[in-house]
Amino acid sequence: MLDLAAVEPLVLPLAQALRARGWRLATAESCTGGLIAAACTAVAGSSDWFERGFVVYSNAAKVELLGVDPATLAAHGAVSEPVACAMAAGALARSPADLAVAVTGIAGPSGGTPDKPIGLVWLAWAVRGGAVGATRLRLGGDRAAVRAATVAAALQQAQELARP
Image 1 (cartoon, rainbow, N blue to C red):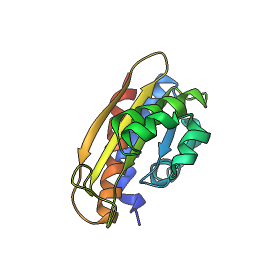
Image 2 (cartoon, rainbow, N blue to C red):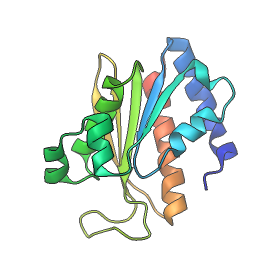
Image 3 (cartoon, helix red, strand yellow):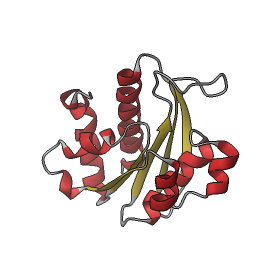
């Protein structure tokens, strides 16, 4: 379970940066299952800047809700840079948000492979009228720790992108 009080110090500066720009945020989450959206909406006044969250745990949901190309999923797998970027771009395309963050990864305790070990997470972002990008994270700990660290990384990245 994510300690929402622990991420509040990350959410408040994000909220301030988004408000300063008049921006709204959308999230697209796989391995975190909505925890980034939950962290954002745990803060009073988040309706000023949080637009919506997509929880797309299955590949079918990634395709149906975000428009991820099935061929991209087949070629690279769900936990990959191309899929993470497509998720972020899809969240932006399917919302009036100005900024989207997306995460896909392997939180464990099973599901890892030598090429894609437990703790591998791709964090992607898309800015309306701007860039789509991604970063690869290698996170340690158990499932809860990987998910909590992913939430923190996504909030920090969103804050950096939203700074005026």
